[in-house]
Length: 349
Image (cartoon, rainbow, N blue to C red; front, side, top):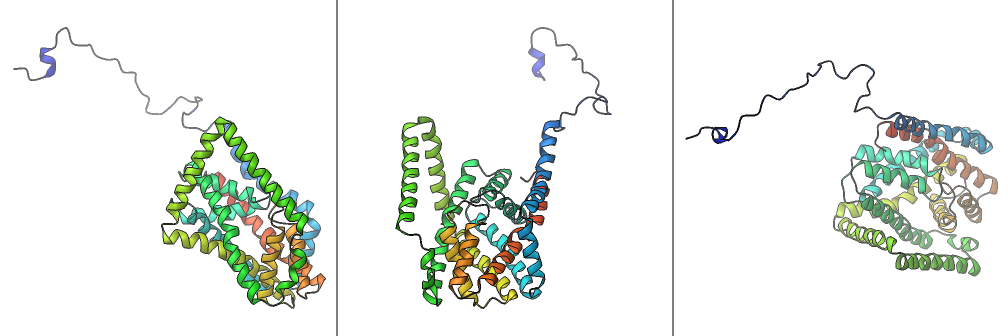
C-alpha cells in the first residue's frame, strides 16, 4: 500500500529546482523601488499642497482694499461680540459636517469629515456656486471608499435639502419679525421671474433631450438616479441621519446670520438679531442664484439693502457686511488652506 502519492507515479521524479539567491540587503543601489511613487505624482502632490497658499496671496493682492478696510473697522469694534462671531463661524463647520454625514448612508470618520469641511470652506470661496466645496467633499468620500455614484448622489441630496430646509426658518421669521414687508424691492419682478423660469425649463428640456437621444448618456443617468433614490430612501429610514441632514441644513443659515448679527452688535448696528437674521435669509434667497464665489458680491449688496430697509444707516450696514466677510471668508481662509494642504499631503483628499 503506497504511503505517498508519489509512490505510484510513473516516470522519474523531477529534479531539484534552482532558486536564485536573495540578497538580505534589498534591491541594488540605484535601482528604483517598486513601492516608490513616480516622480510625476510627487510633483503633482507638491503643487496641490502649494497652490492654495499661492491663491491666498493672489486674492489678497486683488481684494486688498476690502481686507484693509474691514480689518481696520473691526479693530475698533467690541472684541467680545467678534469672538462670539468667530465661535458661530467655527460651529458652521461642525454643522456642515453633520449635513454631509446625513446625506450619505456610509459612516464617515468624524475627525477627518470635520477637517474636510474646513478645507471645503476654503475651496468654496475660490470657485462659484459651491463647486469647490463639492469637489473637496467628493474627493474625500472617494478616499473613504464611497463609490462615485453614491458620493455624487449625496452631493445632489445635500444641494437639494439646503434650500428646502431654509424655507420654514424664513417663513417663521417673516411671520414674527416686524418690518418683514420692507423687502418688497428684493423680490424679483415679473420679467426676472419669467427669465429665470424660462432658463430652468430650457435647461430641463435640454437635459431630457440629451438623455433620450444620446444612448451613451442614458445608462449612467439612469444608474445615478437609481442610486440617488435608493440612498435617499436609506438615509430617511434612519432618524439620526434625518436629524443630521435636515436639522443641520436648517441650522446652517441661522448660524451664518448669527455671525453677521454678532458683528453688527459689535459695531453698534441699531437692529435686533431677529431682523438681521431675516435680512440675511432674504438677501441670500434673492441673490443666491448668482454663481459668485462664496456668494460674495450680489449677496453683499442685497444684504446692505435689506438692513438699510429695516432702518440701519447705510455706512454702518456696509461696515457690518465687510466685517462679516472678514470673519467668514478671510479669517477661516488661512486655517482652511492649511488643513486642505495637510489632507492632500496625507492623501486623505
